[in-house]
Amino acid sequence: MSQHALHPRLAEVRETILRRNPGEVEFHQAADEVLATLGLVLERRPELAEASIIERLCEPERQLVFRVPWVDDSGVVQVNRGFRVEFNSALGPYKGGLRFHPSVLLGTVKFLGFEQVFKNALTGMPIGAGKGGSDFDPKGRSDGEVMRFCQSFMTELHRHLGEYTDVPAGDIGVGAREIGFLFGQYKRITNRFEAGALTGKGLEWGGARARTEATGYGTVYFAEQLLAGSGRDLEGLRVVVSGSGNVALYAAQKVVELGGTVVAMSDSGGYVADDAGLDVPHLIELKEHRRERMATYAQEKGGQHVADGSIWDVPCDLALPCATQNELDADGATALVRNGCLAVVEGANMPTTPDAVEVLATGGVTFAPGKASNAGGVAVSALEMQQNATRDSWSFTHTDERLRQIMASIHATCVETAEEYGVPGDLVAGANIGGFVRVAEAMRAQGVI
Ligand code: NDP
Image 1 (cartoon, helix red, strand yellow):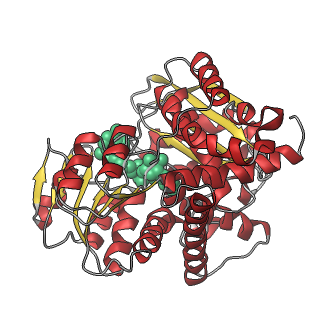
Image 2 (cartoon, protein in one colour):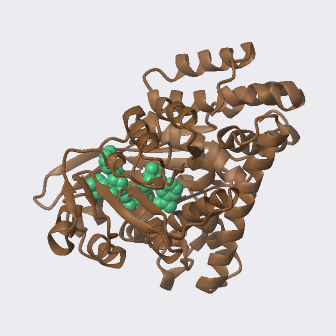
Image 3 (cartoon, protein in one colour):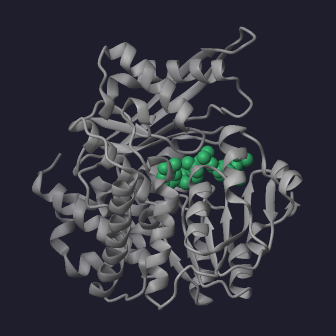
């Protein structure tokens, strides 16, 4: 990533962000990364910064914070906090997932919503940006408890949603089960089968084929494009995939399908490494159906389970961080460089710390930011909305082909934009500027709102 001195105007924007959002370090980090690249736009397209477009873009259109009371299995009333940050609707209805994890704060949701603005713009589709969630932890909760939580969460949130207004989907801790409970409650309260109000639905009730796989597959399609730029492909590559949730599992599946070997995967309890390659179908069964841990995988299928180490120490040609923010730090990046890793392609949102990005750049490792490389999930969510609007249902193959084309087009946008703005090969700048230009042009046309 290139480090551009911050333009005075952008330094002011940054000050305002810090003042208005105290302590929200992840949001500051995400904003810093974007602002560091927008100086190039101010030089070449000053009209896109008129009427305080950048200032408006850094301030969410609406932020919702609400109480979520629910009754657990022992009859005790639990209280969680719910969030929805509706960041930008210049391109379409707010679109972005819900995260249920004990670490979720308003600043977490704000950083994710901000990333979503650029990501959704890069897809070229008619979707604005939002993100939501709660500090509720579904882990260890019964299905009944998860259902009661989801019902309470949706009882408040429903008034802000709608296929033309705001369309949530899943993220960490929100998968098919949670989307089912959320949609059921939305339908009950509104008395409408409004399929387009949520994405990631089950196939029998308005879901899209390939949505489950989309973020992971899309990340690997992006990696495929990136490798093709230097005349390579995934055949024979050793790949480390962090995480073992929705994104990680389907990234791993696609890596294997394209001839790579997944040599390590993880969860918050540690990682499993196996030079011979992990058994991905077994892992999908274990994680998705049995909700088991990586440690159990090692007991059943072998490989070395390391509880307290860093997955980035495992030698690989390609690294796909697919778990959570800031999981790949400078030490991890140093290990990747030392082991001759070719590229880091983010499947998660902001998994690589700024220091690590710097280490990778210095070490000659190509780096693809998540707002470009993990956009496949939201892109197929937009295709799900399209199918809902026309009461249609496409085949897996058709949707997967569309996804592959979209990822190739996002990759091309990043590469071409970086070249156009004089920073060839800088995919971070390419993604930020490519996304910004599309949103800024729409905001400019729509007046001061
Ligand atoms: P899941 O809940 O399905 O999986 C998350 C995985 O990451 C789990 O293996 C989990 O381990 C691990 N993890 C989560 N938090 C932590 C933590 N604090 N420390 C260590 N490990 C952690 O989530 P998704 O796969 O849906 O999301 C993963 C990432 O991808 C997130 O950054 C998300 O924002 C991003 N993303 C997701 C999209 C989607 O379509 N789902 C779309 C675009 C981006 P454990 O089970 O032990 O907690």
